[in-house]
Length: 493
Image (tube, rainbow, N blue to C red):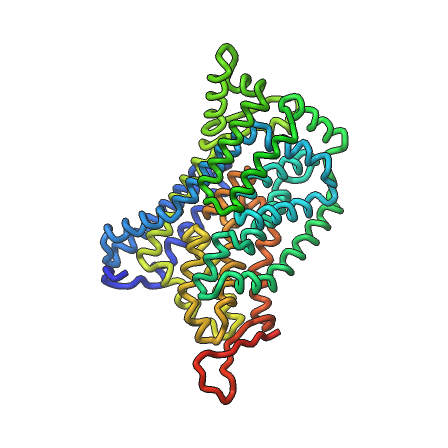
């Protein structure tokens, strides 16, 4: 903003946001698949409006372009991960890993307890790996298939999977956001994690109870006979050997050993291809075609699974839906959406438009409850405008850190609020990197699964309630009669 001749006023700052909301809302009613291009164009049109305003205020295009490139660069790891998730889904399908998870899962799952089980399993895997993305792309896809086989609505199952996965993403010491939030607020990792339990445990408990109630009262469309037909159809195509579970076990072990996500997912993809060649020779022939050497057929089927469409046909239509993937190609619309969102967010940030909108919010926060509520609202705002959960943690963290210190609030109050809102709500925004990714991986529209992501919806509300009712709010208090500069800490409850 140093190169600008004048700062934007509130109306100028809000205009691109308003235009974006109008365009996105229109797309919902006009286009059947908004991810196929209409939402991307909406973001670019809104970015154009923001760019005109920024240029009108005197900022040179070179400065704006550099900020846009920087913002896109920050999202590049996410886009690479997204491509690898697409390839992993393909090789895990033709290797029989995901079908085996579905096959054996149908034997042990209790339909009435399935939704609650999906939350718990997703949470355990996510805590162990520290990654909601890896959890959803692996065990989440299998759980969605099991839910589909027993007749549970996909959006409800997706909500359960995401709720559990983001529980782990929030509290695992291996999670990047769990490390980022305390760094922005100025506290240490384990103080942050311990303090988050005060709001996280009630939130996940309520989530589990809600899914238990839904499961007990759910009218299942599939009978035991239907489930057996699904298993039979899977068994006809795949060799569902228990040895296939070595692939996810090795991948989770690699992730737990803190191998970065990109090489971890590549290893998982390669393992899937190797196990396909070993365990699914007939399927390799079917994908590649007969009349060639098995070596050539293996190469073709492996490459096809990584980059393109794989669609396996059985006599059961429900199983056909489960046994189809699109590889990296299926992720290209989502990457296009992320790029468009980063362009919009980059211009809005470069021109000071986002800061201009949030400034009045900070001034109105007079109480602890109002300050926490403002932080929650700002994180959600940045998730919707900057379209990236990291920006939704970093920018509000920088903005509010001094305000929390001036109110005598310990830094973990801020770090917890950043996680309860910035991390949790990112997956609920269709054009956010998280919302776009999980929607594509699970093949369920963001607004369809949003009402069932109870943990993600409850978490920011819980943070606000704790602040307004002054529950477990840690404050600095200067000891009476002492002159030390370092204050003691009290916790109100």
